[in-house]
Structure formats: C-alpha cells, structure tokens
Length: 96
Image (cartoon, rainbow, N blue to C red; front, side, top):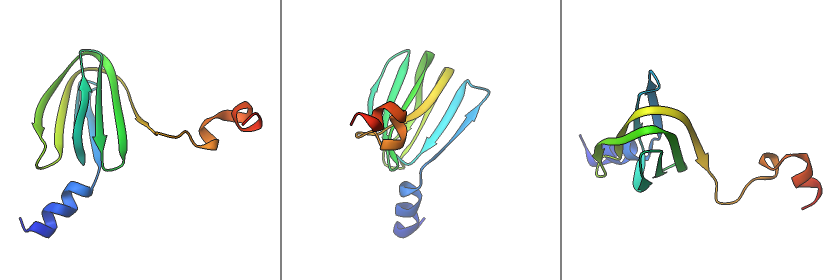
C-alpha cells in the first residue's frame, strides 16, 4: 500500500455493526476512554461514543486507525464539542 493510499484510508471514517454484538470502526485516531459500559473514541469525523453492556475493545491498530468493540451494543453516537442550534431544540434556540 502506498503512503498516499494509507493516508486516504486513515482519513476515511466509517463503522459496521454486526448483530449489535460487534462493531468495526475505521478512521479512529485515539481511544479516549473505555469500560464495560462505554467506549469513547476520537475519529476523523469527531468524537464517537459507544454505549452498551459487557463491552470489550478487541483489535486495536492505531497506526491503521482501526478498532473493534465486542459486547451488547445499545447505542453509537457522536459527541460535538459545541452543540449546534438544530440539536438544542426549540427552547434552546429561543432562550440562547
């Protein structure tokens, strides 16, 4: 794999969930924290939170930007540092 192809692959972010028990993530830049109920990752598209039960970080390759998480996955979402106006709802926009 050429250096340019490797950089392009690392900058792409995406994930695949299998049976709510396994998730493969690419574009990960750092594991921020993890325990049995949550895994927090920095990705090329922002911070990602995985919540569930009996979560375990499996394969972790920081150089390639890939990680797998196994367990019972309840939710996957992104955490923005600043909430946007659209994410705060009607009252949040009115009283800002």
